[in-house]
Length: 212
Image: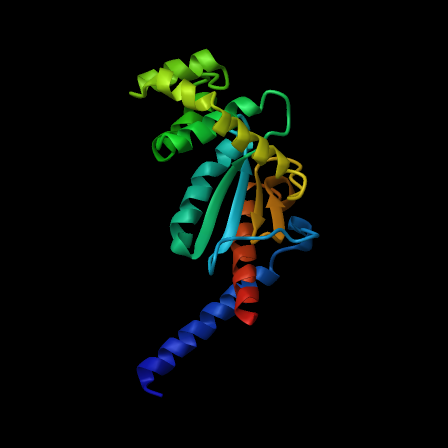
């Protein structure tokens, strides 16, 4: 083995050792395992599902940390968001999320929606406020409303609601890693801790995949 190959092999082993150490440092109180495990369709990537609610202040607080973690994780994970519909009135924001996704506006308006609802107090869960906000962002609000009120969006909201029980979502934000591990801000002990736990559980899931 050449010195260069030996160094690369050593770095690979070091990375695995560090990943294992991170995974072992996570307390069992900071997550739980799903039973039965839920299927994933992410190929070689580790699946991470974020259950969230735009009206949740902790979800809002978590967004910058999650964005930084996603930038670091890169193409190694399959990241999915699912709007939680666990209380009366939550379907309004779920409809808005799926309509933003369907109209290609999600990347541009996902964070502003959070920020303007919480920081600016725009009450964007109310339709008249939402439509006015969309117009101020250069969106055809009437066309958006048609999409938001469509049968397709209703079906997606219903499907999201049906995911809560099998994934044992009891609050938001909740993260499910590779259909197996579940953590949340409450379980982890805070938003910063939650991101650390997510990272460790992704490493654990990746190691488990390599053993198969």
